[in-house]
Amino acid sequence: MVKKAATQEQSLESILWNCRNALRGTVGGNEKNRDAVMGLVFLKFAGDKFEKRGVR
Image (cartoon, rainbow, N blue to C red; front, side, top):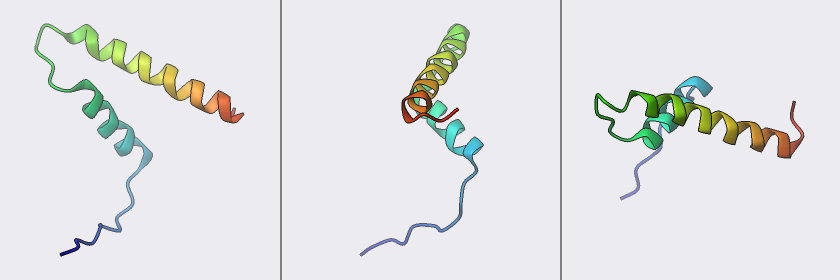
């Protein structure tokens, strides 16, 4: 049995938010700095990918 994928388009914001949640995992209350660091790591990763493609 094959399930049909939903044809609903997601906004870029929701896609990035879902990626952030997947990378972050479960975070305890004392790991608040981890969110900021993960955000910076993701921005660096995305910036490097865009730079490699020549997009500015």
